[in-house]
Image (cartoon, rainbow, N blue to C red; front, side, top):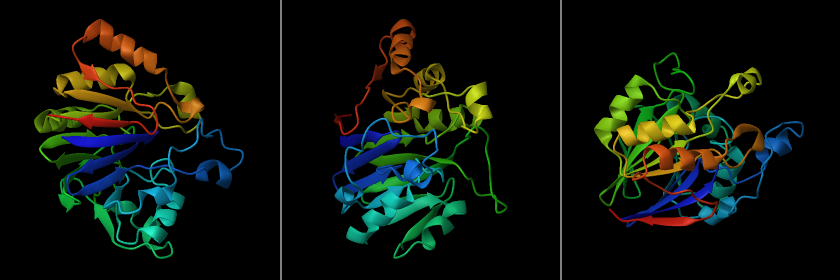
Length: 258
């Protein structure tokens, strides 16, 4: 079994027998305070303050966008929890190493295993909306396969569905998957808002991969870049009525028993 909490947007806190890790926590108002004119404004307050993650074994970021790699969240947490590790895609480690007192930064590379806090972590390339790599061949966007206490989890980060991703996820066969459902469209793309899989794609993809429990994410925090989760539920009801899912509210805890 394993416990997890939804933190809003793509943020997830995971707890196993040996410790906790957190993925993509955006717990501040940094985006709108640094740019008051931005269209990205929080629809609700964070369910917790960064300092409340004190003692977490590691914070994982899937990529460098501010709602996934929030430097204010990390800096504030680092002040009260200096032993916490920071795991980010290898091309973006310099975003952390230059910050005051941040250390123990691990550059995540697709296919290279990391172990921490009782979790086995395997980064996997993500396409947001295309695969992008630096001049060393390291992926800019990642998802994470995780194994803890006999439970297999997949946090996709921001991604669309690709043939490579389908093959990898089907082979990993997650028990639980956190998948974005906000999609993308012409008008958002024109405003430089990068897309993700749609609710239909997330469901079809999750069902094909044999995922036991689908947990949709990345649809709740920013009104300018979300989709109605009722569409997700309706599509499941019509096409895969036996597929398990859970729609979480920010701050909610879920205990998954395999």
